[in-house]
Length: 404
Image (tube, rainbow, N blue to C red; front, top):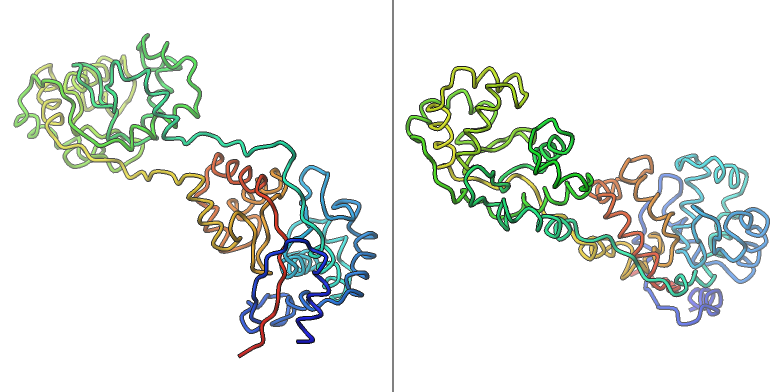
């Protein structure tokens, strides 16, 4: 009872705080502390908070401000941050585990008791407010964005990339890398096609990636166009093709196109272009050199008859799906109820962006965060940072429960 009363005295000033239970026997060990050390911040008395405030005004206010709400680009808010997290983070800076010379120098000579008091002080403050009048801007879902851009392609390539016009390639079943590279060669004129060059003139690389992703995720189907050659003869002649384009024309390499289900007239025309040098590829030029017009049509007919398969591409998670994963540790909408995990709500957006980029690059150490951030795209990072920066931060009252 006496222990709980001490904590209530410390945090009674935090209006509207949620209550989170914490079991003293459940905390994780830190390499820099003994078991339970981080939880000493929960037992800080009012006098400890006052001592922490004096230390903060001397050592921390220059960057974080005395109220823990940063007004400086790249400097995080720490007001209302979870106390054990603050304490462990300060220890990491003190031990040079986190790479910031400014922070390491600021805390280098502080005692462990001082770290406890500073952490308890900032944790006792009201968190930063949501930016006034702001909403969380979100970059569009890349698949939906690709669908929008691809509307201009539908007249020739079909709504879902399945060609219905002889001589026009299908775009389904192609790895995004290959399709983006192909678009670039049309745009810069390496591949000669005035229509494609004009279509792609204003399309940037981001939009190309989005279009390629959209087509990669569509259901594969054979081109709805006729084939003039003999598929059986084409199969007998296809032995030299499988090493690059895969068995039955389904490529296993992102840089090499699948031919299964492709429009036959387009494939035959491409072989002729490689043979006469108007399309440049030394390997393909050598393979096409011995083919006559009939042989090209036969090969094209064989591959056109094969069943295309979707490339090994996953649909990206939406921001809402990423948030659901992040909330498992950081609490609903970034309001952690675990004193060891940081609150993300109302944090500075550029700080969150940099933290996620550093975790993705593994220059900031955390095995769990490396695994989480490894799959994030630039847009994912921007969207997540914007989402959490615009969520209302809530203080939490931690009440240790008696060990059973």
